[in-house]
Length: 330
Image: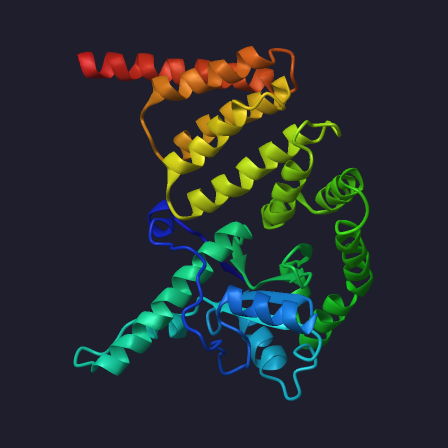
């Protein structure tokens, strides 16, 4: 297993998820290289998606997955899934650099692979990939229903068997997705909430289109769920912005959400607390601004389960400011 770490500097290089060309690009395994291409094929052919992140040649498990599974003939999984293969090996990186004496065609190829690498870096951030290999199973709409852990990559049979073991979960998710398209507005919203709750927190950002549908369907918050969905929308949009290195936009998404009357006090608290966290994680030394967000969060719900932790965080940053003042005065 190879550790997969995305520094904030690296994230700054990441661009939007866009297709690199009209014709879908595939690798030597026959797998798609771009998320949008894999998603489009999945929808058109009514196939679930299998997304794999590897570093072929850099760790044994990735090499097994590529050579024994993706390159196997026949690839038993390709008939059942639309497969996206995001490789971060040294070989993949070499394709992003054109020779010193490159002609226009060679430079264009290198630029294409650079875009692919950037796209897949952003995707890795959205999937919270911390090590390779990693694999995820999604419905044909791109909703994540399973993540396969690194210990399941010991050999071909264990990996394929693990993938197949989620057939029941796929059926359950497909049923939940189908329910979001039937019945009254209230019934659709409740079905969206059912799918939302069935999806792990880490992957709810992929439900953004459905979340936005739910908000539009219940403009008066008759279900009492709109505040929850507005917060979820902010989380998804902030995550997308943060993965591009746009911390200011990520923070803005939470501040806009916090201004919505449908959010409960604790939901608004979550917005300001997360805004403070994002500013801190970006390496900012605007400690007074961080404290202001934290204090607002605390005041909104001083008896919440997070209130004590927020109070302690405020004390910490006040200490940092005091220490910085003393240091500057020396």
